[in-house]
Each structure stands twice: as C-alpha cells, then as structure tokens.
Image (cartoon, rainbow, N blue to C red; front, side, top):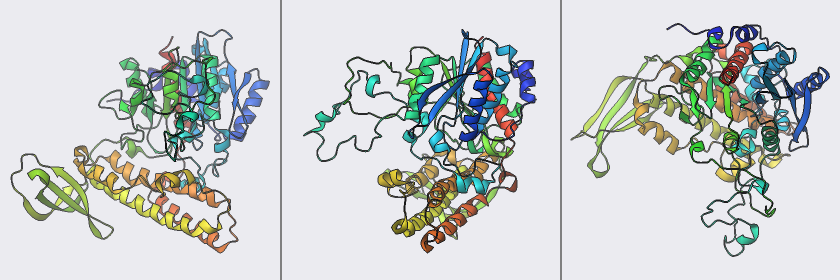
Length: 539
C-alpha cells in the first residue's frame, strides 16, 4: 500500500511550508525567553499567563487576527525533558508571524514555548546535540505525574470547588478532628495544583481555543497521538499516515501511554479512559471556603473537557532517538530453547509452564491456563518462537537488577549527601528506586494470553531498546542529584563513577544508529502536521 504524502493529507501550501522546515537547535528555556522577546519586537502580542513555582514568568505569544474565527493554543515542555515540541511550534509561530500561513489566515495562534521553566532548566543536556549517553546522564524529570505540568490541573480545589458525593471523606481540615485518627488521609497529597498548570488553565480560559496541543516527545520509540475527542474516520486515518509521510514511523511496539484506542486495530491513536466519567464543570463559586482540603490533581484533558466550550486536545508525540523497527509489525521470527511442563493447579485446573534461560538460570517465562486439558505432561525441552512474554520478563528482570544496583549506590552516598534526594517522594511511598519492577509485574507478563504470541519486530525493539533507555533515564535523575554533591568526598566520586557505568551499560544495548539523536526536522514535521490536520478539520 503506497504511503500518503503530506500534500495529500494537508493543503499543498502547508505541505510545501513543512518541506522547508529546518530546526537548527533545540529550544531551551533560555532560548524560549529570547524568542518571545524577539517576537514581541516583531509585532506579536505577548502577555503573562502565570508564574512558575520559582516565580519565573510564563508568557504566551499571540499572532493572527484580533477577532479570529478559530484559535490554536500550544505549549512546549509539558514534561521538562521534552524539547522537540517547543522547537517545532517556535518554527511554526515564526512562519505565521511572517504571514506565510495563508491557508490558516483566519486562525489565531497562541504559543507558550516553555510551560515548565523551572524543571526544564535542570536538564544537563539541552544546549547542543547530545548523544544518548549524554542525554541519559543529564536528564531530569519528576516521576510523579502530580508534579508534571500536564497533570497538575485543578478539579476539586479552591475556587474550582464543586458539589460531588464525597463518600464520607473530610472536606475541611477541621472535620478531621476525631475522624481520621493519628494520620490525616490527605497528608501525602500535594498542597494544590501546580502554578505552571494554573498558568495553562488561565490561558485556556482567556483565549478559548478550538484546538489545544501539548507538544510532547518520547525518548525512544515511534510516533503516536493522544486525542481527546473523536474525529471523523478520515481524520483519524490521516493522523496515522502522517508519521510515515513526514519521514518518521508509527509506534507499533509495546504501549508507552496507557489509554483506550480510538481504532481497535491501531495501538498508536489513544484517548484517556477517565474522560468518559470525569466530566465536571469548573466555576468560581462565591461561597468557596479557603480552608477546603485539596483533593488531587487532574490531567489537562480532564480540565479541558470540563469547561463549557468544547475544544479538541491532542498530544502529538515524536521521539528523540528513533529506529524504524518500532514501526514494523512483522513477525520477529527468532526461536529459543525452553523447558515446558503441564501441571495441575488450583481447583483441578491445568496450566502450561515454560521456563527460559536468563542470566545463567532457568526463569519462568509463561504460565497459561489450558481449559480443555485433562492430564499433566512431564518436563521437556523444545525450540519455540520467542514470545512477547519472554522478552518482557527478560527486560523487567534486567531493569530490576539495575535499579537494585542503583539502590546500593544510594545507600552508600546517603551519609554524605548535601541536598535532598531526587527520589524523596518515591522513596517515602515505595521505599525503593524501582517499585514498578516486582514479581507482580512479571506475573502479568507471564499470565496474559496476548503475551504468549510470537513477538513482532516492533515489540522486540520496545523491550530490547526502549526499556534500557528508559532505565537509563531513571538513573539520569539520580545522576542529576549527584551532580550537585561534593565529589571531593571519595564516596560521592565513587558513586558518580559507578552510576555512570550503570547508565553506560544500558545505553550500550541500543543499536549504534540510536545512540545519536535522530533528525529533528522529520520529528518537528510529524508533530506539526498532526496539529495542522486537526486545524484543517475545523474550517
């Protein structure tokens, strides 16, 4: 089947504009400030929509008609380690400011290049083209969603208070007396929505956009799209065609984001499950009690859907370190020797067990219920196609080993640390660096029926390359912490060396072509083309 071209998906003029797209440098928070100042001097309307947690201004740049028929609102850095979207939208805004978007002349563009200026400044890799090793060793990203801009929006808080069934929970602090015992159930919740998220909420309500885009990128993998509202089927199909037409590829391996699919057969076009039952109206109530307890953050999608005006919200993802295998759904075709045995389990049911070799030992790889089986079968060895479960168990076991090694490094530096540990929130809740890699997660891979199927090329790429890179970036947060410690202390210097060796070991698992950043232009083209397609769907 021939691949569609951008001129077939967009208008010829927009496709030609994207053909000349050129990203010469990633837009860092410092560069974002310089761009906004320059745009203001060129006639853009610039306004402050809020301030960051550290008091830095968060500014929106606006161009287009004063009384627009339609409005696009975009922001970059929805996560502090994701600069590709900011770089893409900065280029598009300059094209619009220069009058080179005649097909969208009735649209007003509102751009916030950096929605998280505090945490984005913590990156140690942004200025310049970093290798995968430099990226992983210098990355910073909070691992709690409630501390990330796209998930720090208000729903049940302050002036946004609304009437709901609270199922007997305290609503005010004074209600806790004699009710919660020694420990308040709200103790671990953040104190309120993120100031950065409130700035975006202000921009959404001030400009009342028709299309809203949080411009993300992933570390590795292929391109995929989050979409809040259903579009016509032809638009959905175009969104799937765009990555290939832009010079990238779709993400057809293991899921990166949890979510429901818009099209059953397409794993890279997603929606948020929670939206179906979390529609809420936000209004500034005069009877708001400032002593009301905060009840948790909401996602940008939840916030947008709860507003009176309908708007499409999208996250068009692309990737920094790319390989075409992530877009290949063909069978991988590798085989491996396993041990197999059929045993009677609980309630007389029979199960097939398969063990594989990993790290010099036989490891349980699969456990499958056999409903029609009437008797067991002794152990035997056979050659089978490598399954998703085998890849998943091997990847999960490796990550657990690496994170346990990082734990041991942390225990060594704890007496000498001069700054709060980067994982203090996670450690308070889970006690260990790698809480998600447990026997339970391995059991899920072993027992899920769809994981017993032979692996595709894309699935193999996910477990073989995406997983180690993600592990390396988790360790990057730890390296970011060690970077501000006193390395004249021998234990600190040794910890830095040992941690760097762990990160380097994970990055070495990537193929050589993935150890350098992929083409920025094709990534930006893929991101922008999906936003433009949604704009064209609204004449």
